[in-house]
Image 1 (spheres, rainbow, N blue to C red):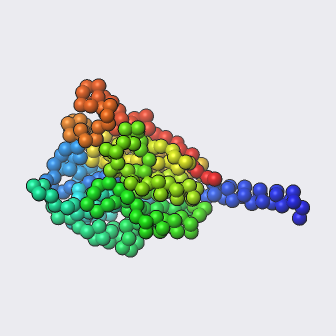
Image 2: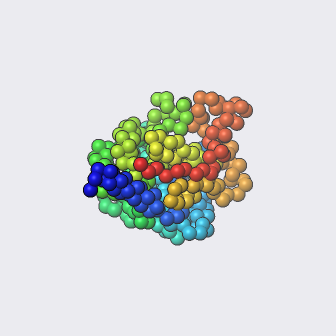
Image 3: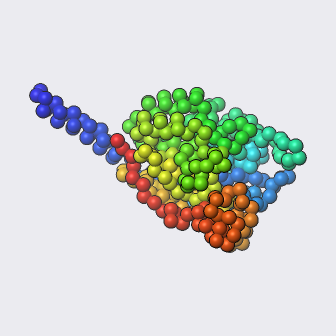
Length: 341
């Protein structure tokens, strides 16, 4: 074989691999809803920034609405399933989610563990993370570890990470988990991959690059970003935690997408459709009464000082910007190209 034929042969192989990868995914519809913070009525449960007393209603309404979506394949939940890991909330969550008509996959958030009792603070005893993981076996979790991976449909690989720190609501990825992820991605090459963690990696605004917002992001997220460069199969990183409406930012070819809480205004979830070349999404409001909707909005303004950015003070103009940022109506729909290199 001459050198020119060798070059053509190599090019043909590269093109065939690329085409196989880009054509491997059939249309797949799925849903992401986040941060349900299920809080059955108990001491300390209130309606404030998070609508704790209405969390059961909001979760049940979300599940009913999702079950009406045709051709759905699965549901993803990026953490904070309970108020603070209470056993009754874990059990009720499993009971409600069992009503879904499709498989669901879940990771833990910083609220899915027992909080450390502080003097003068009302809190209920929570479960060990390990107990919650066993309660959710078969929904991503497959054994005692907080991280998992699965292929819900052929050629689509999902990875769920445990980004939580005991006794703190910030995030970090352990060295053991990084090694596991490196190995998992290595043996699942040529599959489009979505990685899911409760905490975001890349800030979604300039304000959030500052230290006071550090708890919303992974302390060592740069190590995950390095793995995403190493494995171009990783196309998307999904997160929750931030309680802002769905939006995305592209970083080195990977789209980082954050998802809203269903118990904090504007109470939304996201429907995705994955095709050969794109990931499309549409954000939907959780069905609620107009009274509950207005109460959620009022509580959002009244109790949300901690969540305000620098340019959204509690003034008429600041409140307008505050609502606009969290509602993010210009990102309620989007089409994102798949990453193949």
